[in-house]
Image (cartoon, rainbow, N blue to C red; front, side, top):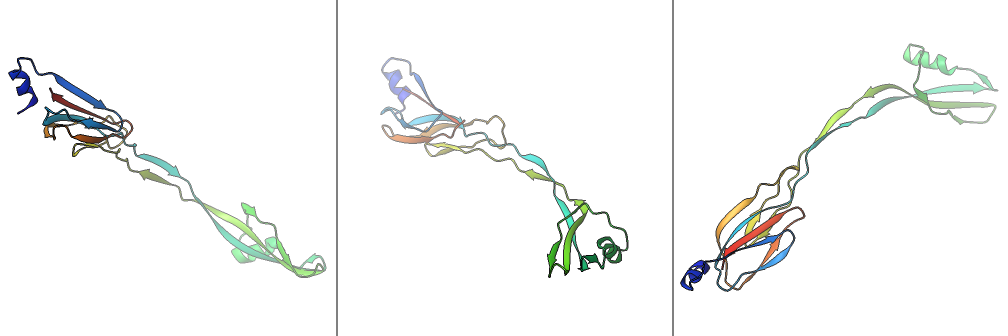
Length: 180
């Protein structure tokens, strides 16, 4: 027999009891209760976002300069023109790397040119917040950072005198109501 029926037979009005949970807890069902109503929601999710990712690409060209007795045999700009066909203007050049004895050596130098902007938009999807659970029911969180919509269950069978774990994530809520 339902708790409210016992109350009517005893000559008193049944009393509604609401037990709110905003964190993990345990519901101890009174001995006269065999059904409860539940309302609740999980935590909020995170909104999706779009961000601009900027990447640059540099073409790397190696040019050689050969010197003998301290006199330049092949000029850097001369060799660059012969290689590219134009008088180059580079955005940036590394320091030359030399090999060989001081009087006669060869060196190579890396220069960077042809900047290419490969920017793009990166979109991350919204996430769904963690669900709240209790008495075998699940209360989902929201997708994105929006107000959660309560989920309602009525006439949920429970065992009189039993204990039920209620799991509520941060920002979630579960309210259990019954008559005694």
